[in-house]
Image (cartoon, rainbow, N blue to C red; front, side, top):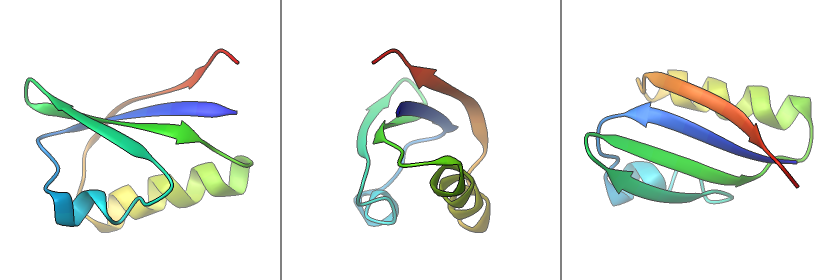
Length: 65
């Protein structure tokens, strides 16, 4: 499965390194994290990581294969 997670604000390179398994693109006040998600536990782990870093998740969606 591939997912996109859109968060508020521009992620610094340091914060982006907290998600080594995901690519990222910064655009117009938001950062888009994207990449493969192994299973539901991995997805919840990514969301927990966002929360622990104080990131506000605006949108999350599964991408078509």
